Image 1 (cartoon, rainbow, N blue to C red):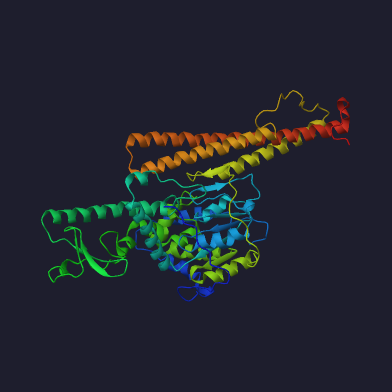
Image 2: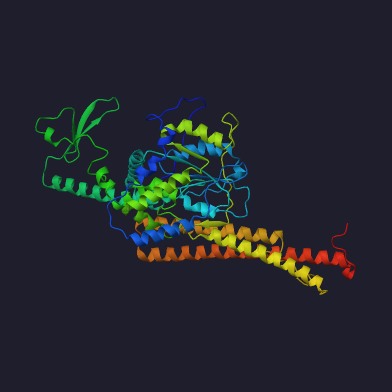
Length: 515
């Protein structure tokens, strides 16, 4: 199911709130409500250790917006976040300064300093991978309202897939610039769950109806309406319709469908008690602010999340921590006061609501991608730091050697510049990264489609091997690009050091830096 483009309200439209706006002082207690613990046994000692590890992991927190720093929109699902992002944030930031789309998986380009607006369903743990001094904005919603909205939306998307023929569902692919809903967390968990459950319930209902029909049963009557609005009744088993039901038919009339309790979908009460709902939706809003969802970049998030669900002391401590963290955000708004939240966020980010809007689109360049939550961004940063350190060390060594009267390194025998040896070579390597990433995206789409369609194990193994190879190619291309950049930095440092020495000594009669 494609994610539909939100319809932005016309200029000057009056606020439409489903209920009275929440006072600012009531916003933070929503997290305490969402973190209400459930009675599940836990290990107090292990939870205490996990808390220490959690605090150790969170080295970066949000900072105030200062015009020049990156803004991360922590998009909590079912809070009108897409409307908020599309109609406000994107409109106020030039396309060249928007980071690549990251809703299906995180995309970051460490070589793109103009990336200043990132939006995703990641939890706060992603901030540990973003540049230092990132400002964070978010929207929250009453936890009960958000739960109902998540239930309704997941069933809506799943029902559309259930109605499609199997071959059409198997070949679902996203169009350019769009992302499939069931490839975005948490719908990547909830939609397949409801598809499987609804298909099973539909099959059971169909089998029961067929059995009744074979036994010559009276069948069931559905109340329908013509295009003109006139009521009539239809019986599938008898393949007949009536304007009025006889007294004998009325006991077999199907009652009006209850959207929260009917035989074709999992009832709301049953879903509310399901482990998937407990893990993903009950506390999803609070856990997203904490960085403890099952989509977290911290490997111990699942364990600490279970501690928060089972231990009241841990829940209280994390609730207080979440409130302190929210206080550091550049903006925290609510769905119930959407118009007011838009005005507040615009003010916090220095956006003039009456100014011209920027065109749609995002930067498409991304040389670091995390489809497997592999945390390659820190690795890239570490390698960049090592390259910079090596360049500085080479410069210091050249200066030290010159002080001892030793000859500096000779650069004339380096040979012709190869990949990574000049700007053109680096450009070729960057292109190789992008091409490898595109192949990996294609392999991932093929694998996901095969899994959803229930493909044979032999086909799944083959597609999984293709995906692994494609991801290995991406990693190899990224490594080559990073290594080339490091070599280029070292070479530049040696050239500068050697040039300085030749200028000072007149060695070889060449004055490289002379005017």
